Length: 304
Image (tube, rainbow, N blue to C red; front, top):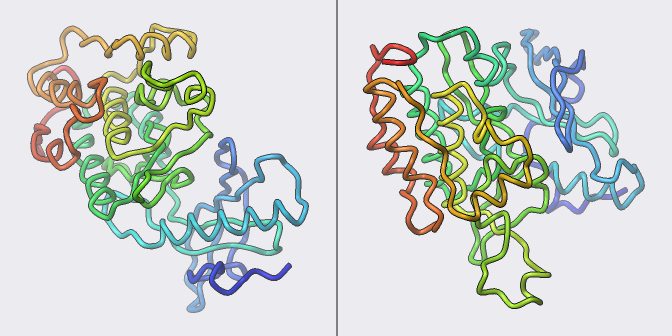
């Protein structure tokens, strides 16, 4: 299969320098392996290798071409960013046309959800603030993340530095917006406008509804990540069925403020609460969240 020159990824090809090891994570359309990277100077690094999987689990030529385009799109976008709170992209791994992967820094602490378990003294508003700074950087470059949830925020080291990861749904914002149909299982983090068409739509428009990812929908998802960090619970933890969450959110339901948050965490909740406004235009821009989130390097953990 010949890939047109304009569709080939320009980023560093690490295929001959990577040794794939065990699986450390799986998603709907990818599998993440631990890997060993020995660079041209002989330096050994442990890395994460995200292997893309075809949507229909077939490896025919058409699917291979789609996978190549996906690799190119995601690696171009991810490789264009550089920020202390965004996971670093290192290069690609492609031992054969039907196997495409991206290489990034390895985060042994896992994601923010697992990291915060049994760590009550972590400065959570500071962590949320840093995530907002990473998202603000992406939005300043007109990049929409599109899949904000606790599992997609990795932890760099024991100090708890958060890194935005998983750019599988990320897009450059264009005139008509961007959309995705891969929202399965993400309803706890989805803005209401991504769940169902407006009531003002005709039947035909409702039948053909395709949700548009926007900066405003990112802000809603960010607010849910902040909730997860403050409370150690998934959004709407008391509601078991995703279908009920869709119904309640589209009726205007917001997360309920927990009792006993503490002064600083209560202030952080006030900021997050604005992210969950039903109308996208009523939500703050992420730069305002960066400005308003209470931050102190010496702030203690939960319930303070």
